Length: 280
Image (cartoon, rainbow, N blue to C red; front, top):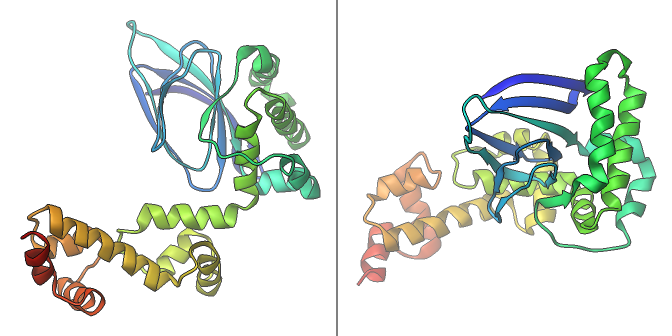
């Protein structure tokens, strides 16, 4: 449960915040097209994502890339409170701050890393102390100062022992349109959303969405999405006894009859025939 929250806004976006929470605390953090830097003052959570399950230590920071993450802090004592400072790394803000400089920061090294602990208290403590000062004196904050603090954080992270983490994150954010589309499609590939609705989730017109989709997946949206749904449907037909109509709804079709026709057209047999053949 969040007890208290202080925020600093930049261009109508919450860019830095300090939250105080009571334990036990479980937070679902979804960053479809942004990064997030979180520093834990006294107690730190377990970080869980599709790729990781790791315990973070106190006075360490976590850099979260695009995706879905769970942060969990278990209760240790009665009336326990935990503090965290969060810096949101929006691609449009980074592009504005760095303009043409941003590629120069990431061009020297190619990495493939996950969200992870990126800095310890030796590197980041003074930066956190400076933010604490501004939380105590919020009237001093303005856009110019926030820009300087974001640049300071980026430079500190670039010099940390896990430089690959920040380079990979910034690289993803700088090409955010493609990353955003990929994450949205992966998140909703079994949802019954129209192409118009998917395009809106990606903040694109339908025509732009189709063009960007082709760049990312090398396929048309209808072909790729229906292929993914049918692939999942085949798996469910093989390993479960779910009714065919339930499978159709489960993989994102709102009309079981249309699902059956499409399945037969693409696979060469009806769903029931496929199940009989594959489960013998």
